[in-house]
Picture 1 (tube, helix red, strand yellow):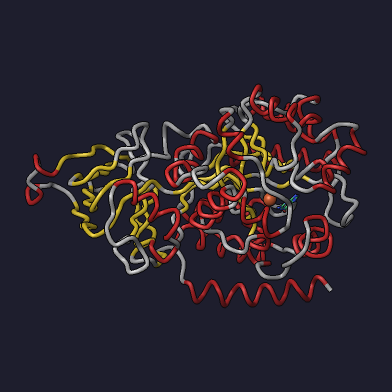
Picture 2 (cartoon, helix red, strand yellow; picture 1 turned 135 degrees about the horizontal axis):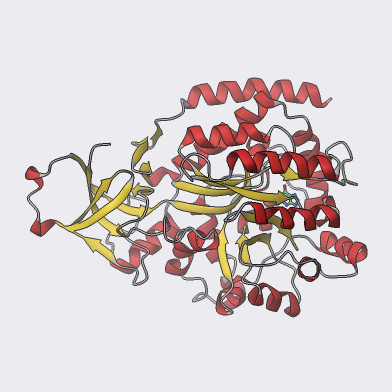
Length: 447
Ligand code: GUN
Ligand code: FE
């Protein structure tokens, strides 16, 4: 690969000092950030490599989303205005159960296209009960960095058809992990994904955790404490609070990512902290499903890892990291005051804190020498942005005023994958037309 010199207007590094560098360029060699050079010491015309002139645009690290359901993208708009358990029972489980390989592929491609054009370059995905290999194949073809794994379900009172035996779940998961953990040059890692307590036996949860020992560096990813009825059912099933139950069966450690964590008792918050558990906060989903508001300012204050995720398209209904940043800030302000969840804090949740949650902080999450060149260029010189940008206002501009339409270009491992806001990987019209076709067929199968 040819050396590249990327010249932006400014670099928002998300490093430990939150440096914002002006008159600097990023040199990319072999997919990594090889140097961050001051332009005043540099004769650009002498550069022996490709020059990438983005001098109107702001360079940021690619966003990291730690809770996504790619298999649900096709169902966007088909499950609105419902609470979690109805949403699953009436809509999402029947839809997921009707996926075949082709509809799954269409769903995953739609999701990946949406995420990548929105500046998200790393995800933790919940997967699907069946045909998970399709998700891995599409991840590998897309340029996305990911932890992913098949969604495990071995009991399902809400929708019994979407279920496999405990042994079948464990066997298929092991086979998939053997093939895909650390695949695509380490860009894909395994995220074990038992869905949630209501759909997983204790045996499944414990043996999954045990299985992780064969796959060092893998992640345990599940939903927890999202909805009051869910928490009450967990209490009836186990005699414990959700996180307390996980702790009691040995699931909690620093490789555990729990999505939501809204309805927690003090002892559970202590348990998250003491076990270095990662919380994936999904504020849009939490509002849309009427689930509640997680006490994120407290978690952050207590030193608990918090990062952001859009969850699935049918409970959001976007996959935009910008929306998650904005909503995560806004929902706390009426409760904890306008100074809580400031723009810089929230920007870090979507970048370096996401990387730390996934143990990828030495590879991604900030713009520093030696890290992977997963980079996004934003156009912040638009009429919908602050007219003058001080350093502080750059975060304000990104978190409070920006969206997908500000994403100009995206690099994954130093490869340009979004140019002028358009995907280089996917043809948008073709994606939509294929997705329509597959959705119609899926609806027929579902009848
Ligand atoms: N809990 C179990 N499954 C799901 C899901 O698909 N989405 C959300 N938001 N919560 C869940
Ligand atoms: Fe989810």
